[in-house]
Image (cartoon, rainbow, N blue to C red; front, side, top):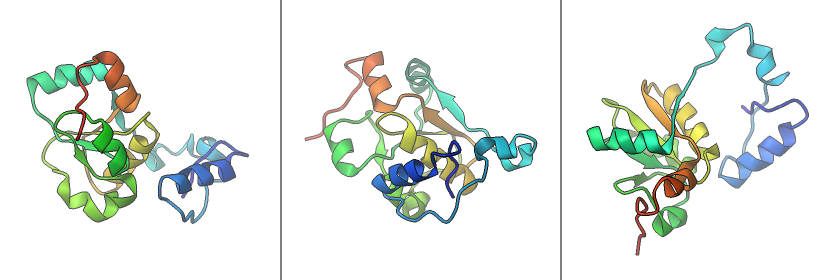
Length: 149
C-alpha cells in the first residue's frame, strides 16, 4: 500500500521500486487527509536527532539497524550497527531484539521511515527513526562513522 500526496502516487511507487519494493497493491485515496478523522488508522513513530541519539548511546547501548543496501553499509556505518536491507527486513525481522528500543537509519531517512513502519506493524513497540540518516550522523561528528574494509 502506498500513501502519497494526491497526484504523486506513481512517483511514490517508482521510488519504492528503487529500494526493493516492486509491488504496490494499492494506494490511499486522498492521501493522509483521508484518515485525518481516523486516528485509529494511524500510528506515530518516534524520531530522534543525531545529537540526541549520540547522548542516548552514551547512557545505554541500543540495537541499531542500518536498512541501506549492504554495499552502502560496508562503505560507512554507525559503529555497532547491523545491516538488514529494507527489502530483506520482513524475512530477517527475528534478528532484531524486541525487548528494548531499536534505532533504524538509512542514508537520508526515507527507507528508515518505511522500516520503522514495518517494525511497528510487526509488533515492535519502541522504534526510533534517526532523522536525516547517516548524513545527519556524519554532520554531528566526523569521527562517528566506521569505515568498513
